[in-house]
Image 1 (cartoon, rainbow, N blue to C red):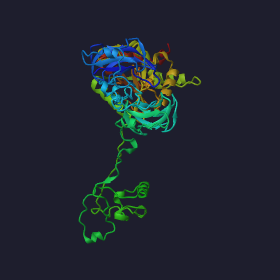
Image 2 (cartoon, helix red, strand yellow):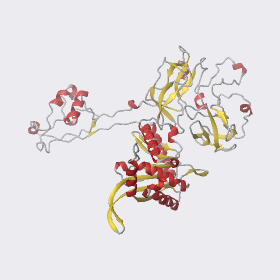
Image 3 (spheres, rainbow, N blue to C red):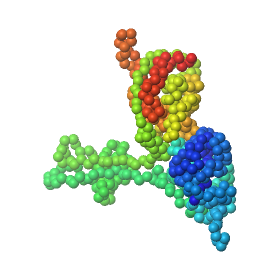
Length: 551
């Protein structure tokens, strides 16, 4: 059956979209996950992937044309299928949202009419009965182009609260950031489908809004969202101990106060200890596996910790059986961590990486930075200088500033540099846009602002999109050399090490110099070895003679 694909809402504020490029044409076969088109939103141009399989039967919006969110974008179905009914405005419950279900038999007119409760066909099939008047089902939004599921970090509204259009309903953790999600409806929050810490797929039930007092239990029951466990509910593995079989001892040895007594434990090796005893043992640095419990069933309690005396060194050699303690905690992977793993795995095993390593003389760069920072209210970092130098060099080497797509290679004339920033959940890459046109202080201010947002989980997807080249700097951690995985669809990433003092040869003399190692990882599909080497030569000119960046 043919499916109508509507203009998607690719950002939380998007109201209409423009088709920048169609990557499929009428008659092409479409697989689930294929990129259908590039859509220009109010914030960025983003790839839109298909959630359906079949043949592209109709394109409703041509390249350069604009239409509202949820208006007809395309139709996918079986080859040769008649779609004239859909084009003439007939409603199809398998492909239209918020429309009554068609009845194939007039004799069934008294049956309950099925109403769609979501924005695409997969979610609509979950609706089993008509929605009460004024009731709207709010589904998990797609807040980034790569988002597949979301986690409710915080509910700003609670059941029973009045919701106005534009109010913030909740904070949603995506694969890239934690973002505020605003309501597009007004009414009363009648139902919450996900508790804080729970996750669900995009378009699964998030909440229900409608008139106060409306019974929506039937509506909620029709949504079987695959909710995953709260992060805090992940199984916690308690300290366990392997209890070796105690060696046989003589009666004399049993009378020896220095012989360690066996520790009471369950058959699975679990230690029995009160929470207070565990806390005191941790404070005192006492291994619970060495303590004899005096509580019920051998449970270790407070007085056992307070009265514990370690076995004298050497007195129990040959008598004490050591019992190591294994202790660990399972931490659920965050949406960001899963997205990073997926992206880096795809890049490493799809792009043929190779590496070019160089070492630059940093004496002039150090002197330049000191002079530049002597200007009042001015402070730039070496990283700012590297970003600026890369931007200028990339303007001269568009091949390195390129992107690979299955059917083409894009040579970018603009320079947007991604700057890798470490955060607790992993690594994010905010983008300094048009870096070649910005001054060093402007780049410094932009990087500082974006890094701060990254660490506070306030980066928007638009601030992490569109990079044409990436810089990763670990020099501040004392790392002098490393390689990085390319941030696709970029063709290259520069790894920057620390500035170190070492003996160098100048004018035939060995003197103390300052050097920095850099490694350029290149995608061999777009950047040949000589091309990458020429880029590094140009970059060397800017780094070793930084005054040329001001010309």
